[in-house]
Length: 279
Image (cartoon, rainbow, N blue to C red; front, side, top):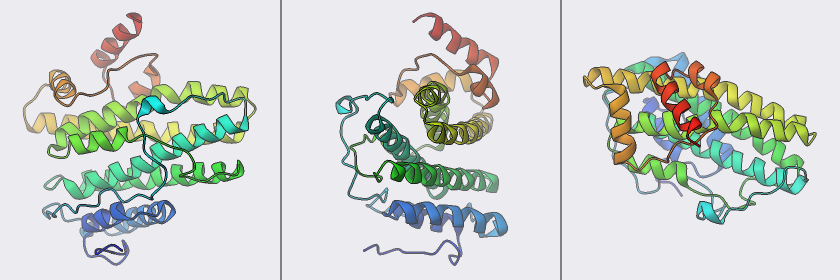
């Protein structure tokens, strides 16, 4: 049992409510509460208290007993030509979206003294990630499976833990690095699903890619806001933080159009093009 159970609709502070939703272990309940919390905060932004600070509980993030979490190297790739292979893929995507709900909620409660729009932005992201998770869960059920049926890895939350002490590092290395990789990965996955005749799953990828462009744009917005506030150059700062926190190395192919729409500037895109050419 949780010792802190707060209804997002009833709590007096949206950021404290975000922490309560983050601690929720049941995925479907977490998704529903994340969407309700954004609706409530958008209707009454005064419920967001940027000055509030909260003690970190020891049970973050709330998640179910399954899926089993394993090393990424132990997860085998399967062909999308089979129902079994597509079920494994859908489960992996659902796991990413479940983690993305947690990451967005964590940014809301953890980092005080940001502008109100920062918290509204990340509550919106949490709500949209919850929608993605629900879409994928429903599609997974069409294949006779549920979230938790296959093993998964914990790379996304691991980076959240590493950047827990610095909102600048969090903005640099979660939305602008890990989530931006989804912009690159989504089109080829969608293509293979369509080639396999799974147009229902491909359509979900379209929704996710559209929304993820906006999520990465939000990350870019607040990364540059913080760089400006600290009088830091965003390009050299990103390189420093990526090295300091051992961010994954970027590898192509890159979705330059989506990255441009998501707020990466031309200097950053040229640097990525150089990595792509160096393969």
